[in-house]
Amino acid sequence: MKLSLTSGIKGKVIVITGAGGVLCSMFAEALAKAGAKVAMLDINENAVRMNAEQIVNNGGCAKGYQCNVLEKKSIQKVHNKILEELGKCDILINGAGGNNPQATTDMEYFQVETMEGSKTFFDLEVEGIEKVFNLNYLGSVIPTQVFAKDMIDRKGCSIINISSMNAYTPLTKIVAYSGAKAAISNYTQWLAVHFSKVGIRCNAIAPGFFVTKQNEKLLFHDDGTPTDRTGKILNSTPMGRFGEPEELIGTLMFLCNDNLSGFINGVVVPVDGGFSAYSGV
Image (tube, rainbow, N blue to C red; front, side, top):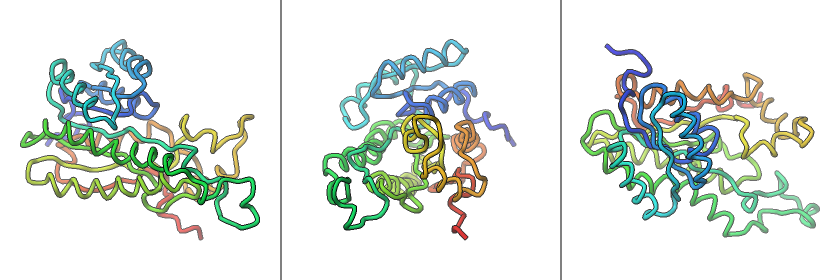
């Protein structure tokens, strides 16, 4: 029995979207260290190529590709390059996502007396809601349509989506992001069933609260002091702290490794310090 976290990863071609960002570039680095050939996709060409170069400089195999996950032709073009340069995709990690201020209310609760001068639910722009939902949901569906064809009837292939604590209980203010991540969890289960007869597993990771460039303004003031929202988060996280990005790696490796998780299909794994288990009392 092969029990090493990396035993089922060496030599695999792993495609990661959103790899210009902090978390997904860290995923790429860890998987490359385990011997995978990593294709890193992001709309930000400079960021993704720099991240790939750093992995190569450290002895790993990685290539960065500029790609728009909402344009199927863009993904297909990159897919052709990956086939030529790395081979067929074995594992797809749908990491592209994020929120947008246009889809975020100013206040947690709607109150008539605070309507004036603040952005309420009634003021949210449809365009902003579409941007957030499309990026998180369609930005996972479309890459899967392209890359999952490589995996059909091949051993050890899987898809890993990135869900969120929002999928369990929606956070205040971010209506579109919460809805989109709930959709990702549902989509993960749907895909797991749909592809179960052709050997493709599909699971998801639901991170708790990690400080990233996308959320640091919500969590800390410009002077570095925590916001009220940070206090609420930490009070609702039994472990009493934010997660460290590296603490997602073990779950990722486990789900990627068919030797260890080959019978796990259609699950969403919380990595949240107990947030989803805490009732508040």
